[in-house]
Length: 91
Image 1 (cartoon, rainbow, N blue to C red):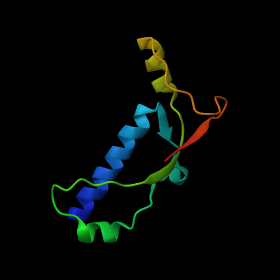
Image 2: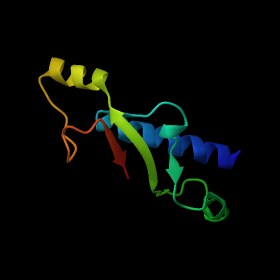
Image 3: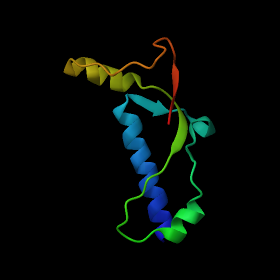
Image 4: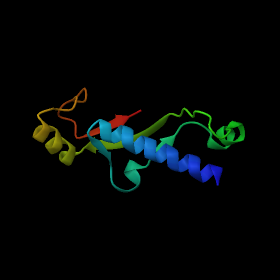
């Protein structure tokens, strides 16, 4: 049960971080998130209530809906290093 809860927490955290940057994960397996830490080792050491740090990578693209929301609010998201890029990697 703890493993499932940690996995869900990591996924939800990553989704929130990605949304903050105005991007979304690519569809299908191309957008799968890869956690760099060995989660079995993390689970062995984890105790309920401990903070958990992790590193993950996933391929994303700019979210047109987020861009429209920014424009409606009069703000813009920070651009990626290559403003013509349609995909970004968030690490």
